[in-house]
Image 1 (tube, rainbow, N blue to C red):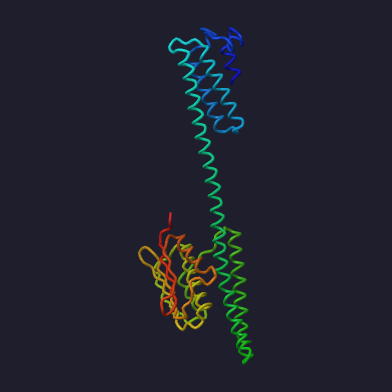
Image 2 (image 1 turned 30 degrees about the vertical axis):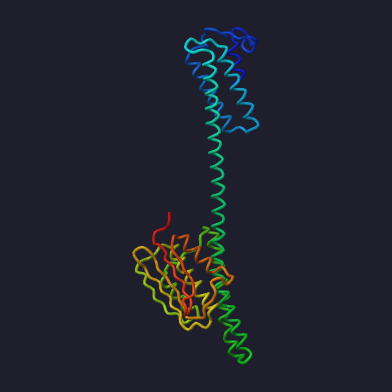
Length: 322
């Protein structure tokens, strides 16, 4: 670009006149046509924008300075009928400043876009890890905690009734088998699509969950319509975790009520027991996982003591959050 400018300004009188002498330069010639002059200005402006936008700073800075200075010099020594030399040089400098500002703005936007894309990738990875952690806790830990409770009970019974303790062993084996099956199903789902499988029949799954919890559960399920899969999965996982917490932290509970019903805009669920009240911060991740599930769906969640036991309640909207 700089070489081209020097060639134009010194086409008839040589480089020495174009660079060192103050005068009309090439004078009137074919190259002084207004269309060609405008094209030259546009080309120089585009070059400045490209340099300020894409070139490394160490390259862009001297290159921009060289193009602007050479352009201003060319505008000064040329002869113009409509404007003075000072006005022509000022116009070139103004165009140079505007072009550099546009290039810097584009560079800033590009950098922001890259940073936002990287942040989105990190956020997606973080959410994926959280989802996997919740699934591991809700699915596998549910079965493992059941095995642990049975094993502890068998150990206590074995001191007085070995036959009774042996009768508990099949339940422990079933729990281990269920845990292994849940782990394999989750790994298979992650390999296939990266999304945990959702429940197909939420009402049946909830009744089955209550029956296998080994707790005195009374269910009231009122789901008149099929809910979307991810919502159904979250409902199932929340009820599952609530029952697991009751079994782990309130073994003296004599009544557990599970209520799940459908309204015009949301699924309302509650799990309440009459066991010994316990702290909301027991050191695990069950309550945290339940709360995260509800908040991701744009719902509301509460878990705490009621005076006579423990209550877990959630409101999950039917419509997916945008």
